Image (tube, rainbow, N blue to C red; front, side, top):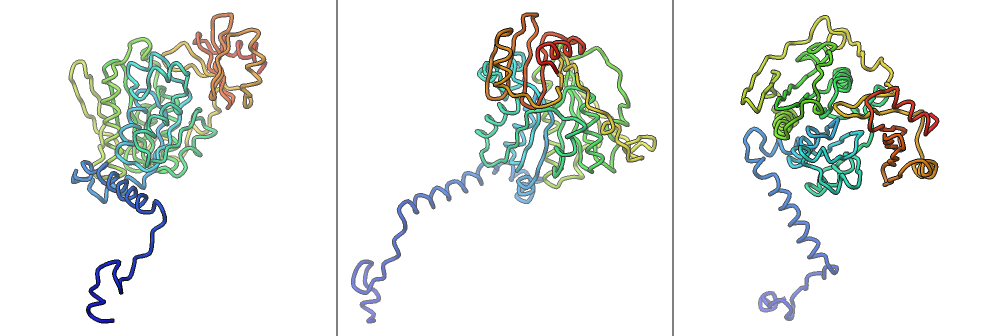
Length: 373
């Protein structure tokens, strides 16, 4: 080839034409580049925060967490972790969205309450729109001694969004059995508290609080400010980011408590494992040795959860209950308004929420009367 031929412009004699791309290939490549750029930009401010950096962000993306309870605490925690880029987030909740939730549970809206959506399902829909690159695992149901170890399998961290001590003690026991840190949080009225329980480094929740007595206080009796839940959830979420991003020495070793109304904050050092604690020192886990109760009063509400002996076919029960009750049905549950004034909410996994009573005996009686179980 002559020098003149070699220098010929593209398309002229001697030019080599590049292979033709399939239709749309250029557009797809540009879209992929744009998506990678968007992902890089998504976490850019967090990456610039020196303690996290790019290496910490990668660790977050490879992390797996479980949030137990998707009420005011759990839903706020989930938003923080989804936006921060934690790779896999499973969350479990047994309840549905109610109008009274909307005052403080910012992940939900009026349409969720109108549709009677389970909180786990409503949360998954919203969180997927916030960050489509996160693996979300919503679970509509209960945490019990029968399934707790399965739920915790393979997770790096568990976060507390529950509203009752029994479930918290169960989670703490399983976390210490499996060597998984447990980020505790609680909020009521204008008061909140948070701590990180790390197996082998701190005491567990059980040896800190023992078998607590009922205080008579609940969100139903004394109320709760939305801001109290937000601050508590933020304290929990930042400790989770520390642990998951590799900044484990920075994780708090104190129990933090506060009163937002009076603007008071207090920290108390967490003790080490208690030699007398069955969990920390004797490797016994009392919560796992207990049978799950068949009737549980839900915190702060006139509602009892009754567990039946097997799964419930919602279509079948809608037909059976229609002559006696007002029926509302969606893909996740069946609500039956009874002539006695209470309401049954049936779930496919065999759970029934009895609304309108806080008496387990009354709740069992209604379930037995209408479901025969």
